[in-house]
Length: 113
Length: 115
Picture 1: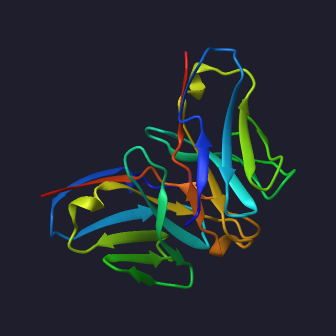
Picture 2 (picture 1 turned 90 degrees about the vertical axis):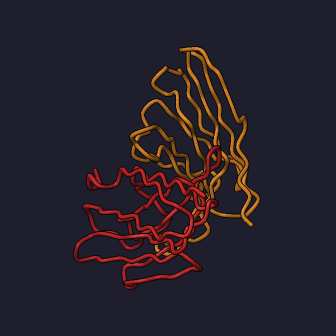
């Protein structure tokens, strides 16, 4: 498997709190994707961080990538109820045409009022 | 916004029957993918395609065939469906030739139950 044990998570927080989800992987990757999946929908890309980037921000989202420890994190600042979803990280050890992404098992985040 | 449409949204099939899942994208993306999603496994790649006429095996291709007759359409075919193929299937299209830049756009999924 491409993934470490800590990829299966269930997190429950209150609105306004900050949360960080972690992702560890076993083999080299050129990029880490973070997707969110709402109930009954397909995954949607929310942030992409490349191997030459240590941090990427998008609104209240912040992704980090540490290639030396082969880990990535996704942080959400001041979480809101609409952030409730399953969050996946995905890696791509291939270099070439097309992605053959390997997805982690995901972290189910529940944000309560 | 990318548009990937899957049909049907739900399907009940009998063991040994043939099932075809269809996917259409209107984004003119070259790359298309079929994944299945099961509890405890996340998303796993079944087949993918680089363009019309091309199909490639992913990580779990056994029991599945794929067909890419045109840029827009990519089908997943289960010739002899088995209960172990009960799952949610997602189609995606990709917007770049180089994997480091590619973003995937997913459809809403097809829930398949094989009885």
